[in-house]
Structure formats: C-alpha cells, structure tokens
Amino acid sequence: MHPDPARRPARTLRAAALLLLALPLRLGAQAVNTDRGGLALAGYDAVAYHEDHRAVPGDTGLIVRHEGATYRFSSAAHRDAFQADPAKFLPAYGGYCAYGVSRGYKVKVDPEAFTVVDGRLYLNYDKGVQGRWLKDIPGYVAKADANWPGLKDQPRR
Image (tube, rainbow, N blue to C red; front, side, top):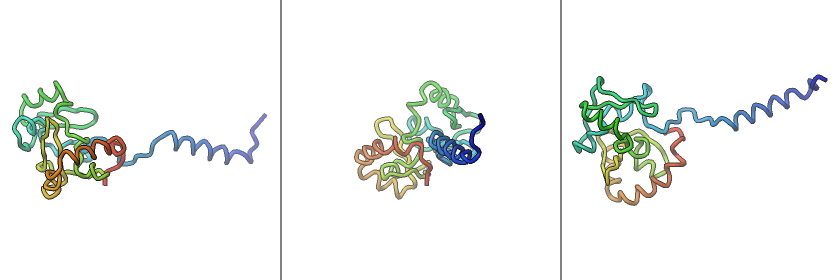
C-alpha cells in the first residue's frame, strides 16, 4: 500500500518542523569568545592575568587548544600551567564582557580591560565599562552568574 500522494506535503512539513525543533539553530552562537579563526582572548596570555597581574600578548608559537578555542601564552611555564589546570585560568563567562553578561547580553571585550577577583578573570568591553564594573563587582557578578546559563549558547551582539 502506497501513501496517499496528497498527504506527502503535510508529512514533509511535519518532519521538517520536528527536525527544526530537535536541532537548535544558534547561528553564530559561541560559548567561548573567539575571533573567526578560533583565537581566544585576542591572543593574550590567560595565565599572565593571574600571575603577572597584567595583560600580556601571547606568542604564536606557544599555544594550547581547549574546548575549540586556541589560547596563546607568553612563556612555556604559562602554557604548562594552563594545560595542568585550564579551569583555574579561563575567563569568566567564556571571555565575554562580564558587565554585559550582568545586563543580559554577550559582547566582545578589550583584553586590557580586565579584573581578577578571588582568582577569577573578568573581562570588560572597554575601560569605560570597566569603570562601571568596578563600582559594584559583587552585584554584577551575582547578576552575571544568574544570566550566564541562559546566555552561554546565544549569539553575541
């Protein structure tokens, strides 16, 4: 018994709708803030923020790939420290602007607008936004922590 040809379009539409519901369409969505080539932190050394207390550009020859992103380091010691414990050095909120996440959106950052608080690296859109962030870090962290699960897989602005 062959299916009724008149019912094929309806079945095809139902199948397509189910497929669309089953597959999240998150074009451009990234949990980690990278450039088009997959470079995180604009090439800055994630460990230097913690160890040197400053933003230090990484070396193109000292890299680690972690969860789909490429991280650069200014020294082999920093690279090795990151490899030993990436979670210790990864920026909060995938490297997106912490203030932006606290406000409910993901935006790019200036890697030199950063703060390390209680061992956690927070990046900001620019120095002006960083100034706002510094006025109430605990409050913004609480809001960003609450917002991040819902934003993590959303596209950035």
